[in-house]
Length: 278
Image (cartoon, rainbow, N blue to C red; front, top):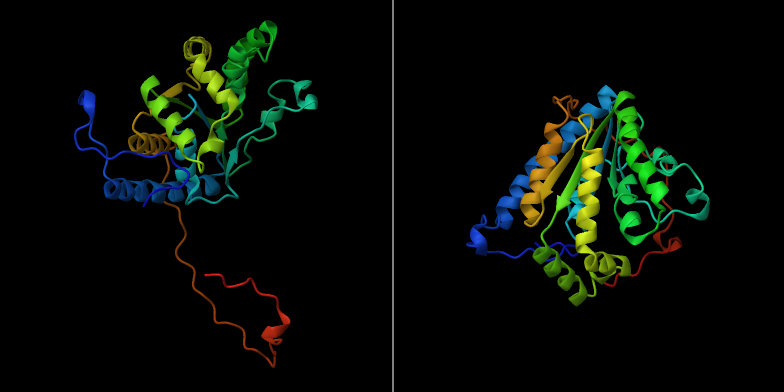
């Protein structure tokens, strides 16, 4: 079964360059089901223990961040596992302390927040595209490590992932999106501008790592050229970052339905139904 919102994942037994063969769909689905089950177990543990977890996903455009986030949230509760994917800041938000609008999305006890891009926009796209001043950029580099240390001291578990994709693989994924109307919305003029400035983004990432790869919250790099492996490796690693145990309560018993007690259902003709097209 293919995913309509995914770029194609090509099957191959012997890929070029001596790389590992692609994981077959049936093997991927089996392993994905296993780690998704563990995510549900972890979810209950986080709820019972009142943990607060923040997971940051950064990386190149088309590196596969969204695909991993989708697999993480497929089986977990949207009430406790939230995605924060912020749009461009408003005029009012631009006048605030830089981290302010991100703080509003931080988790309470028993919650996990997945940042699909984060405050690191300032170290990446804002830096390269000139959306911030030199002074704002330098202040971010000074304050970001202290901000993250403060989050960790407050009890938040902070995990940061950088999705690394090769120039050649990004080119293939961009072309697939251009050729498919169902995926074309994934490409923006900003993505294409970033493609043109590949080396500038590489330099910005290197400087960002040098300043923010701290002991309290290190960067974990995900090799994302193989999407299936990237998804399984990332989820498996996330599970390893939080020691947990199975505290899922025993299954509930379904109670008997209340007797009708003389209740009479209104005629079906009084209701407006969706047309049965299929």
